[in-house]
Image 1 (tube, rainbow, N blue to C red):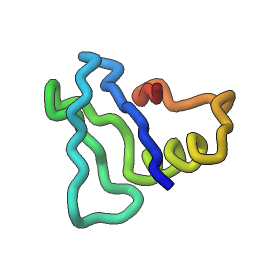
Image 2: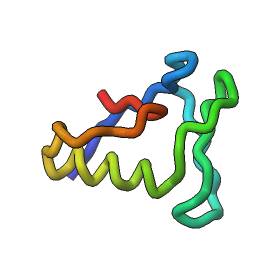
Image 3: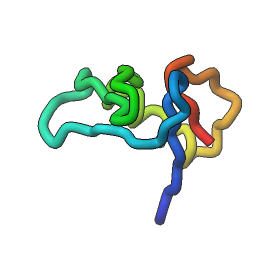
Length: 67
């Protein structure tokens, strides 16, 4: 299975996401274009899970946009 998602920064609309190699669920994810914090690794995992399950009506955090 391949899952394709697009995450954009709510601040600058950039799509360059920095994901650290080491860290737990509370590890911060940052926009590489403007430096804004986009959420945590746990937030990203949740959004991917919702996309896979097809639940697109769930309210997403304001700082992450999932297309």
